Length: 103
Image (cartoon, rainbow, N blue to C red; front, side, top):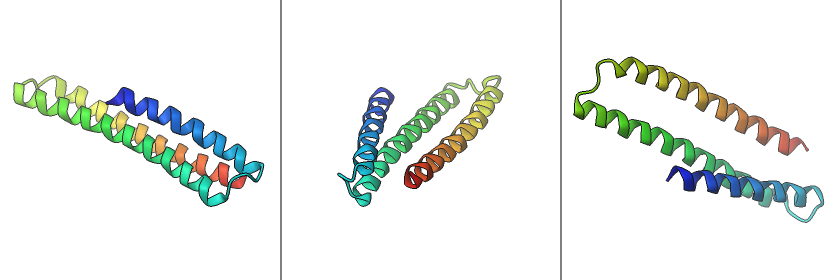
């Protein structure tokens, strides 16, 4: 699923780039561009959601198997880095959106 999500993000990013070019050359309306940008953002958010769901499933599996002990601290550090990554992703999306609108 993550591979498919990555491919979808790549395609949506390319579509958004083409839409930005069309917008710049006045072949596309602003609302159509925003629709493409929102589709790209949705694809990126779905990718992150699926990463989180995968990690959650892994942790549940470890809990069921009884392998929580030493891996618990490792899991906590992974959760912290994922939270930081999500914050960075959100910041990047916001700056991309602001930058594209201001162009």
